[in-house]
Image (cartoon, rainbow, N blue to C red; front, side, top):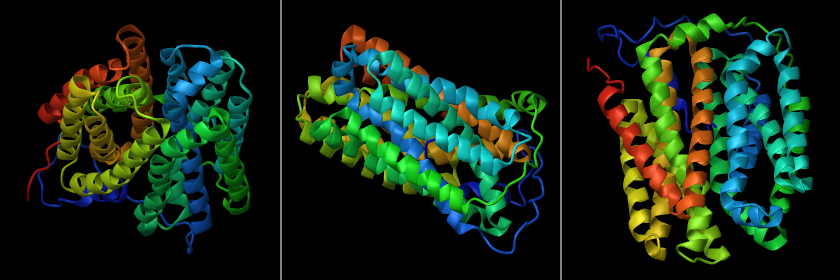
Length: 420
């Protein structure tokens, strides 16, 4: 998921350097859309933020429940990890295709249907009695997740005057930060008290509240855009776009290979109690919250630097887990700092992709979401194969290799801001 960052600096990118020479990878900046309403629809924006919280919470839950899910469904932990893969792969397809398939429908109706799909996904997860049933529930989650993220920015632009767009997106993406802090530790805590299904019950309650909030707050939003495949094809011909997407595939797959299987590592290698695991995952979430802030501050000045610093730190942390994962202190510090480092990626990559394609920001955003989801799936698959083959340290091994390659690629070919 694009899962995942404070976005305020993103929307100042194209105006940061009015006297700079032209960037060959950067298309002309389009004119801002006209304001359609004198008043901002802040309750509707808040409802979208609640939707983000529900989606990201449901997406992140398996990482904190993997051991219990695998035992209950009588599968390996690597196989249970493919519940992350299913969501990611479907989300990768849904992100660029949903605006195309629904281009004639009112966006309010589309968002309500996607939220209903989220509700159904959580219900099916609670009642699943096999891995196949749980995978189907996660497929539905991927549809809702990819569809929502592909249109969130465009909807925010229609719900508030253009001058308030950055503020609206920041509010929407607070749902990501709150979910990052809450999902993993609360999921682990609820799973220990009442079983792993109880966490999905809670996620289902949130999704129902979201549906009600959207019913009462979202205004009619008739379809205005007419996206097509030619725009996506043209974007893929731009070198800056291609490099950004490749960097996403490497860096994000490395992160999720490590994050998805972090609980088996803490239980089977570090031998921590469930209480300790929950506390460390809470630290991971808090680290991610502050990492979002720090990442946004750095990316406002250089998205390349934000990604490189975050990637280099995670590569070092993965190496520490491979070498000293048996130490409770090393593992706790590494996991918390890992959450902090990841905070640089969402805003860094968002800034990068908009900077090289400001004239087709929605299409470029769909490609970025698709790349994120493919990377999540790749990390879950690759990490799962290594975990089943060499044990719980397989996740950090995959993360170390992929993160190193992605960081070096960004360091060499990432965007460089020209000074005035």
